[in-house]
Length: 284
Image 1 (tube, rainbow, N blue to C red):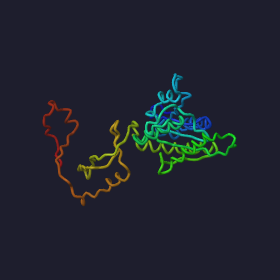
Image 2 (image 1 turned 45 degrees about the vertical axis):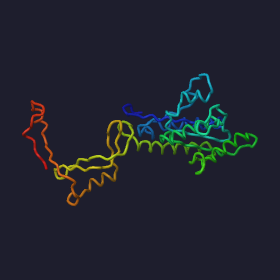
Image 3 (image 1 turned 180 degrees about the vertical axis):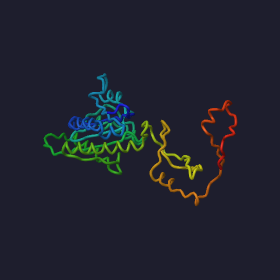
């Protein structure tokens, strides 16, 4: 990676029971691939980190899910990836504050935290995948699979957590989908953040100073995205084109002001701060 780039780290939390551990490992590999020099994340000034209890959590005492979430709280998740196949997981001993019912599994608890955080803060972005690979019926735990089907039924428009999920069968198909979806998210993230410092961009109205035939013009209420961290302004292509094509002879001016113009060399000779500079030009 280029050393002088100002990289922004995006953290990915993966929720996946034991029967889809290969997919969890693939999520790590895909993040590493996108991070490589001149790949998508690197070119956008971003770096991906997959949060994994196997590598990021110290083995403290307590309920396992509680220990994980204490060290990897939802507040640090930028992207949530959920994966389910045959198993839903084991109860965590924690109660869902929104329903008063005990969580059926760690995956359910993690998804619920991510979903409500997304509804409130538009973060983390949620990607969910369902494995539909054929399997010997003897491998299916009826209760576990029942919970999986009930969970995905709640993605319907009139259910508990409406949204979309992607189905896949083969591991290669999963890799292709996750790589594609993460790439889309990276470009979406970059459109909302500053190219200079990766600060958050917000839409607002501003004044724009332009010169026409050597005379200054001020245009008010020009829409722009402004970085909340460094103040950099971004004008979209449509706005820039409108400013370029302004017909000054057929647009009614709002008001007329006087403007003084100074030469920098004259300013450097001034001995008294605030003293009037007789060499200033006046434009109307």
